[in-house]
Picture (tube, one colour):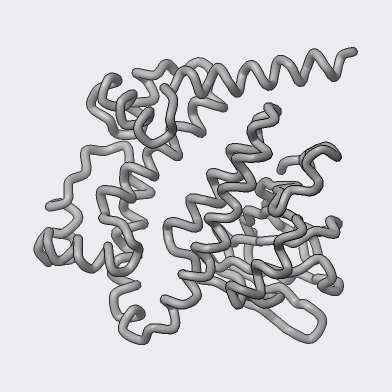
Length: 282
């Protein structure tokens, strides 16, 4: 679980601002993330339970996210098994008007698609740096996340979408569990006994990306986690661990999506941690 983020008074007037992020495992009732006066997004990534907001009950299961406002009354949490949660807290002068324009109300519930789920992970990763750039990165990703939540909510109002969701969910689960393997489009299509073209059309209509786009983005997300947390792993080690056949191809794909090489990203996080440690010792 991460601490609240020290954004500094200089940035308090940003239109959107991440103030906290992290993950928590809930093993006892009434132990959900709270205590902050800011807006919150709570995303269940494992287990089941329910949140009780005054007289309203919201069922929690994997993939469900809840957005609630700073003035929401006390929350209690009941769990039927260990509950794994990722959360964001945020503020900003733009939020009331922005959320109103998106028609996102207090206590909005979302069944998250892959894109917003990965954005939440990206925000949490970005805030682990102590460099000032994380503030602007977090703000940009938060803007994208809120837009994705709006689109996700609109799409779930389309009746025919529900027909394909369970089938494609099995593809998402397979990729998340086997991203380190050599996965092809034909292999994924074969699991549903459909053609590659049909799978591409279904997946893109549902998630606005192809299955292989999702595979690449998920591999890069796992690679970033390893770059930040696994100092002993080389770029070649990480490339193999996330399913790339060569370190050079991994590097080119990483730079295309992230704007820098894997080692540059690692050095930026290590430098920020070192500077933070020096400041703390003074």
